[in-house]
Length: 114
Length: 398
Image (tube, rainbow over all chains, first blue to last red; front, side, top):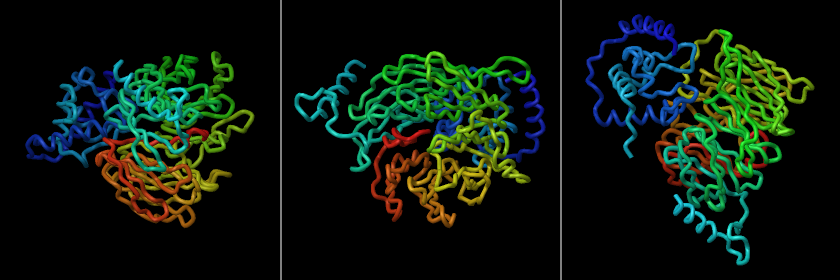
């Protein structure tokens, strides 16, 4: 992603975030975390690859995502990226859950428990 | 690894029932065989569609998310295209790997030539098509999908919608370049490329009609499809169904529709709309829309039963616990089935009396009678995705 694109995304984030409803939920619990890992690997995986190595969507490796502002990642997950095939996933995820996923992506996404 | 190979060879040998035959000669035909992709395990389950049972597995195939399979014309050999760019040649009756090449970084599928001698892989990274000798997997041709980007730089596009055409040709679409290319490999070392440009924004998948005459590419970046009549002396692109969702806000697409596995029913094509919970019905002579059928979600696969009387549809999440069956005459939904969690694919038996349906999160393949809609059997398969039967071996565009 180019610097300009990151910048415009950040502007978009600044506009979007204050509109997000304040949610007082805690981080997802263990069972929900397992569901989220499954969802990312399997469902996000249909475009990004089950191993998140990319496909129609870009690779989601920690190396690439670590430099992203966390809020920009969360906004991309929740709102999608207009003009691309990336939809917003907010109907499936709370803000806390999206943030948990974004953090995991930046740290190297966990494998599914066997 | 060596031990596994030996074991696989021993299993194959035990199948050669006639003494004196080659140790690897199968004792039965291949017309009722098939495979189910176990995407997370990197394995194929080999199945028999007459006995409705699992025969065994072929292991060690790498990352099989979005894996697809084409068949050699003997119906015994299959070519598996993995997401990780590996191309593997497997033998179903022997249930073993014959050859394997790491041909790209990220791959999305492939095709086999009319004469069965060339296998082509379509790649995202590096964007292009690579062609291999179907017997040995030795490289034959490399076709980089190079185009000039808006800023004037040379880029490589991701390739989608690859299909075989009569006459040692392959056709494919360039997602990033809005182009469709036809590669003639009648002289395999010197592919002749015909480039069709400005076909419409972001062609994402395509199909070839069963007669090999028409290529239809779905567009993600705009409402409409790109149609090429390959019987014209100078093939060109015509846009059909332009603006089919005019004035409507598209719904989010949580999984891209697939066009391969075409739904040609009689004279009509049944196509998944993008961002709309509808199937589009297109009459295949003048290519005009004749109907729209509302369905339960974003369609992913719309597949005609081989006789064309029914179209079966599965969906993107969150509606992917359902499968709908449409009667192509009345254009009504006949049944809504719930055959498991996360339905990823369906495959009809060669003449369509039954359909096999993979339910990823149920770890199950259901076999459903297409007349009574009774479930005939359920097979336990870990995280099943694509199902591919050997009847594909004799069909163009599969």
